[in-house]
Image (cartoon, helix red, strand yellow):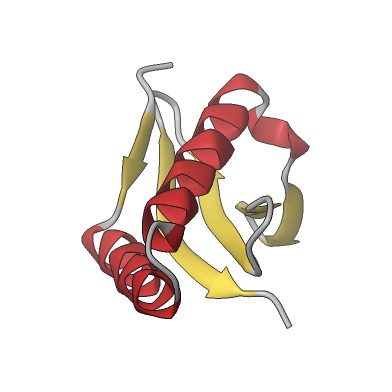
Length: 87
């Protein structure tokens, strides 16, 4: 499998969240993005470990932050198409 790719809107959601966290506390935005990258690596290693939420859409929780990554397993890649806040 080639890797994890992010839809442009998913990237924007994650970067907006990182900016918010950075405004809350210096360095927290970078920590958030690092946690998202760690989550993406975990998805790539074990793509079917995410909980199926609908059809082929899976969800994997981001550690330390109240976010989840929404993705689907494609023949040649993992496609992240959203991020959502956990409540």
